[in-house]
Image 1 (tube, rainbow, N blue to C red):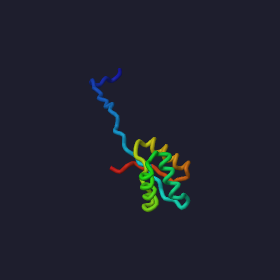
Image 2 (cartoon, helix red, strand yellow):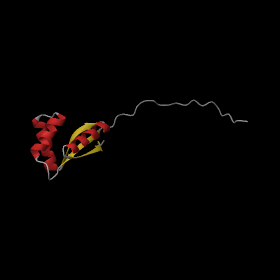
Image 3 (tube, rainbow, N blue to C red):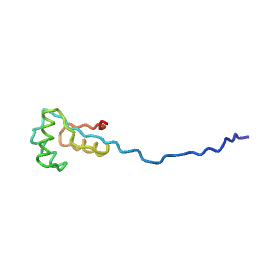
Image 4 (tube, one colour):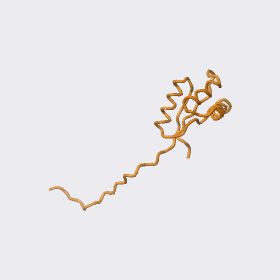
Amino acid sequence: MPVVGPDVEEIVDLTAAPLEPWQMLVWNDPVNLMSYVARVFRTYFGYSAERANQLMLAVHHDGHAIVATGPREAMEAHARAMHDYGLWATVRKAPR
């Protein structure tokens, strides 16, 4: 004979987890010219010349710069695009 337990009401939380922001970083390398890096930032991301130069200088002086922030899949797509341009790029979870 099957064992029957007490009626249990199962509560399921169907709310989506908040989207965690991710960052796409471009790293300094000994190959690409600074003008080329700034041009990639302008053409791919649509940054102004001033913003592209700020990011390029951060890459040059600090060794890397956070060039984009957003959902993980988008940041991974941006990193692949940077690789296609010959730039070194990685993705990381944004610190809290």
